[in-house]
Length: 486
Image: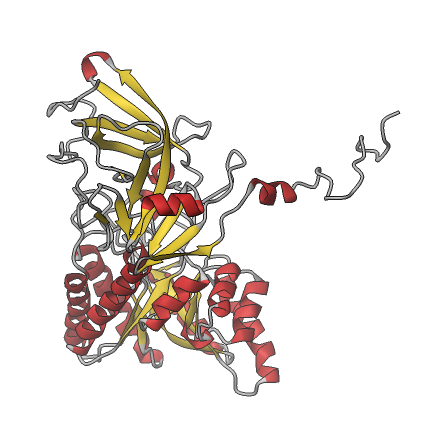
């Protein structure tokens, strides 16, 4: 049997051998996560054995109280930071992290608005009863149909991403204006501040060579054009520097550059709002140390206020768009262990491969970004010594890794339930049917109760979309020509 070694060459420097491989680090797990007297993991007062029996695995579990608590805390942090400087804050939940009608209701009940970036996300928000005036619509390539729908339902703010989109939306809004006299669509212009966030390249969104927004130097001409179009009403600027960012330095630098532009553009007309995006990081492992949201809020708003004071202008209304910071820590994915395999790499050390019944189809982030996660045996407490493991999925890909580096009890065995925390954001949202794998259900837990908020798919669901399979009751033909067998 493998056992942990403090100088294991296969373990990354940040990963420490835990004194107790059953412990649940508070920074990573929902506040409700605990083990009962028998060592079984409970989430929101519901045991994982019950969750497996009722809903199967893999299974996304979302702690409703945790989502609400994060939403309320973030809103309060930015409200307080803004009030200290005589202005107001608006907090939009970034629906791309994970959006369902239930989640949209939770966050709006906690005082958040909703940001969407596709026609599908818009329809979910509307179906949840979110007021259109409290919705922001993003996207670098919003279709004509999506823009028409957004204008039709009265979306509060559309974030313009290009010169083409300015003209496209202007024409749509003008047509709407003929039906509703005096109508003007409120918009923001997305600008790249040039600040390179300290995150994965694919998550850094304010550098110059990428698809979102417009460079700082191009913004004045685009703002002038927006102001020329009678059917558009410019409300301000938008900037987003990236995702999963720790610390406030990048946000403060971006704010400084945006305020400089904001001040210059105020000379041509009112500009009451500045949206500084989101991207606030969370802990995925015990080694992660994200900045508390109150500290981030104060640092960002303080930076804006300083820049405004230097220029003798009022602090604008500030908007922010957290997604991961609201739902990330609230989510836990449950898997069942199928096989384990000891792999020796000679003098480099040994690793135990633990295969589970999910993988990159339900969590693409490790394959896309090299993201690190944690894991624990959930159905019981392990009794073995910590051993270095790699948790892998069941897909036909060597890169199908769920948790790249972790220490689990050495007695982890087939049939165990394994829990991976901090999966509330960008797991279901990025899920796929790779290898014809049905997407898991999403179950909400709270106060000892569990309920499905997104139904899981079945193989029958997937087969029903295959046009080569006869519909129930239909006579199947044998050849593409439509002719049966001779």
